[in-house]
Image (cartoon, rainbow, N blue to C red; front, side, top):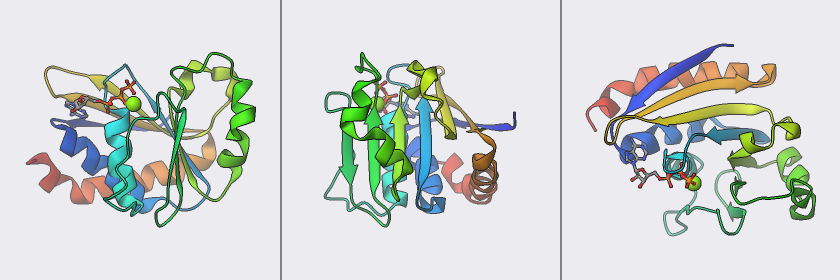
Length: 166
Ligand SMILES: Nc1ncnc2c1ncn2[C@@H]1O[C@H](COP(=O)(O)OP(=O)(O)OP(=O)(O)O)[C@@H](O)[C@H]1O
Ligand SMILES: [Mg+2]
């Protein structure tokens, strides 16, 4: 499996990474966020929302209690957090499948808790390092996301240097 790795040294740098992906995203895409509590999944999604042109007056906040928050941007953003989900069947009631297959961008935190869902998309896995260091690994879950993963890598490399100074 092809993957590439970024180290960020601040929340803003993780947002900048998410923003680069958000700018590249077209309709009907899925982004799978994994990693420990506080690793930066929601932080990454805040940047992704910026890249999708979600208005600044609509701040992207954690959906851990609501399971899903929805934002209107250049493309709609559906932000799920499955940490507190007990029964994956309950996702049907939420219309999860319709969101996944819809025209928007679906971001899923903690989707890896339910491997049976067989979720595919761009996977962003975040790990804690020392202090504010985060090690972020980006890969494709399913062949169809491979080109987007590669485009993301190239775009970050092209823009990466200024972010390194954040
Ligand atoms: N390099 C970094 N990247 C992202 N967040 C960082 C970084 N350094 C420090 N932080 C801090 O780590 C926390 C990340 O919180 P965030 O809510 O994004 O995590 P999460 O992975 O979504 O957690 P949860 O599983 O609880 O939803 C924030 O308080 C943020 O300020
Ligand atoms: Mg979160």
